[in-house]
Amino acid sequence: MVASCNQIDFIYKENINITNPLYEKTYVDISGVDLIFLNSYTPMLFGKNKSNDFKLLINIEEKKIKRAVESNQAVSNLRYELRFKYTLISNKEDCVSYNKEILSYFTIIPKSAGYNYGTDASLEKKYELAITENLNQFISFASGINLNNCS
Image 1 (cartoon, helix red, strand yellow):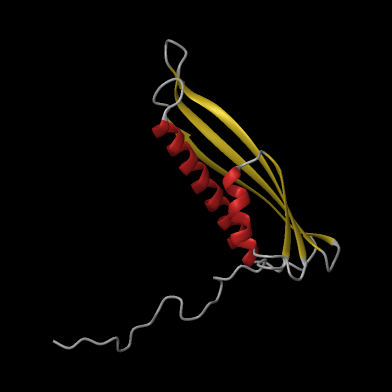
Image 2 (cartoon, one colour; image 1 turned 90 degrees about the vertical axis):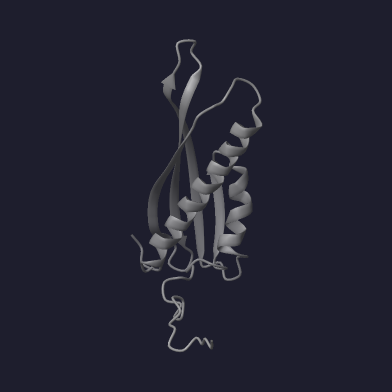
């Protein structure tokens, strides 16, 4: 049997809307809650600031909400909310070109009091996924607008 790749169209044949318009053009300043994974992910997402076209301020607030409490006052369901407030400043125009607030959340069910490797590993992974999703949403929104217009 002979097989070929004749007339196959690749999804990413044209790179329209799949690039990051802020890559290697942005100085990133993060404030608020210190999320360890964020510091390793932002350089991958924004690259090295070569042209200094933009300054991105990211302020992160975290809120923990007890969703279920047992009769002995142990928390059996905990919701984490991460609120990212993005302010993009155009250095060329010397103005704010984009503001966006994106909320990410996840829930965790603690298994026991004290140290629990399964719960801690799960929590770390959920933080990582929430941060990655939030930053990618911001890039998606930012790629759909003219970043050099002042708001």
